[in-house]
Length: 459
Image (tube, rainbow, N blue to C red):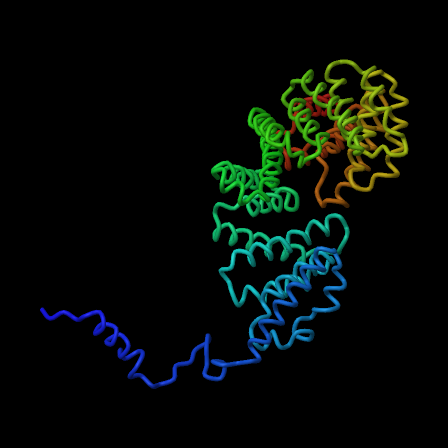
């Protein structure tokens, strides 16, 4: 077989059809004869670099409005970049600035333009998901208005793009964590969020030291994922799993301190409380209080749970001492409930009822719970008609607020009606409760008493 020398081979390659013989001009979306030599494109590239550098400086200085005034809308401020297709990175940066300025609709529009041009871009998917996610938290804090279908669409947008970002980079920590927070805190779906937090944790723990160093900014979200995973396990009544996750969170965050100590030890105390380990709960909560004082954080919620812990330990005297540490004018409805429980434990029912009555005027969300507590106190003191009235008010409020009957109001209303001699009303309320929750605690015993009462009425 005849071989071709190196020089001959080079000549052959030089004269190949693709290089020598084909004179036809080939143009596509990437090049045309008009932009083969294009001074405008070179100028556009330099302009893009200058604009991006300027935006970065404005971002560092947190001058959101200045950046918006200079470079938004991109089509109007930078038409040359749009014309030469060098606008995408500028749009992404401007979208970040718009989000920081709480202009979420505008930010989302910019990111959608970018994603349409590059649909498999992880950074763009992640940015769009985060912007939608951040807008939902801003709405929850009443920084913006987002209700009804707009809110539902925003949840869907965030979820879709978090899922896409995780598909593109399945080893992500931050996107799994944020998707979990979307489900847990926005949609209130703790059990669906749990595996996402677990995945975020597993992804970080699977990285070697070099990878962790390279992605060090994600470690904070690993710590937060541990914290939220512990909360999800507690919601699922998995006390052992919750304690394990919380202890790991405490250990991993010992040096970094990403999460306040007051929050971490409160969470540990809450887990022990729900697991019935009241001594351990007390110790964790007392330490949480000391941390909160050092960190200058609000600690009313820690006082409240510690007071309930002392009630569980049969120390209402210490519960009273703790509950009174929060100034009265700052005591919210849930705090007042525990305060009333403390006085009930001390058998000062007048004081307990007065506390609950006072909180009624300030509670527009969970007023029914206050009314049920008042009903129980009235029932205990044999004021059955008064108790029935409280239950009726609680049920009306709950129906107006949530569109469903209040199960506790039906039960205590039926029992109060029975004790006041109105067995017909008691039977109607008990039947209504049975229809919506046939396994409500002690409902069977109540219905037996109602049947016995009706039989006696018929004699």
